[in-house]
Length: 196
Image 1: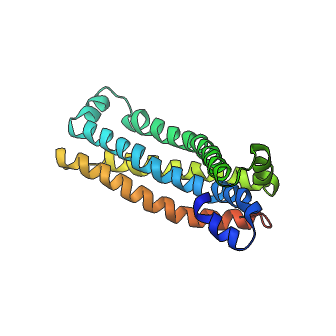
Image 2: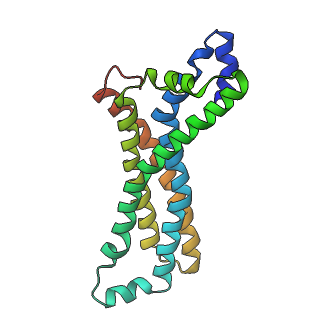
Image 3: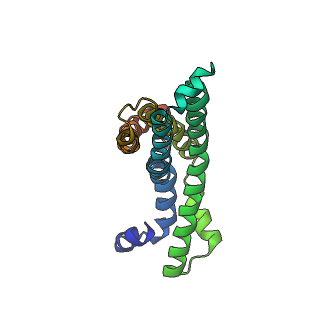
C-alpha cells in the first residue's frame, strides 16, 4: 500500500502523511476485512468440509446415538473459536502490515522507525483501534455459523462435502462484506468525529 500511495502523496507534497494513511487504513478497514476474508477461505472451508464429512460418514448420527447433543459438541466450539480468534488475528495483521509499510518506506525514503511510528499513531484514537478490531468478532460468528450450517446439514453424500466447503466460503465472504458495510456505518454513528 505504501508503494501504491507514495507516488500520489509525493505529487501533493504529503510524503510525511504516508505512515498516518497506512495506519488509518490498516486499523480501520484493511486489517479486519482481509483477516475476515482469509479466515472465511481457510477455516470456513475446513469447518464445512469436516462437518459434512462427519454427516456423510454417519459420525454425527453415532454421536447422537450416545445421547450427546451433536450441535453443542461439534458446532458451538467452532463458532466460539472463530469469534475469539479473529480479533487476535486482526491485531497481528494490523501490526504486520505496519511493519511491512515501514520497511517499504524506509527503503524508499530512509525514514527512521521512531519517526515512522510517531507519525503512524499521532492521529489515531482508541476509537480507531477497538471498534474495528471488535467487529471481526461478528465476522467470526458469521464464518462459524455459516460454515457449520452448510457442513452440518449436508445430505448429498460425498458430493455434498465439496459443495458444503464451497458454499461455506462463498456465503461467508459475501456476508462479511455486507456486514462490514453495516458495521462501518454503526461505528461511525456511535463514534462520531473519529477518522473512520
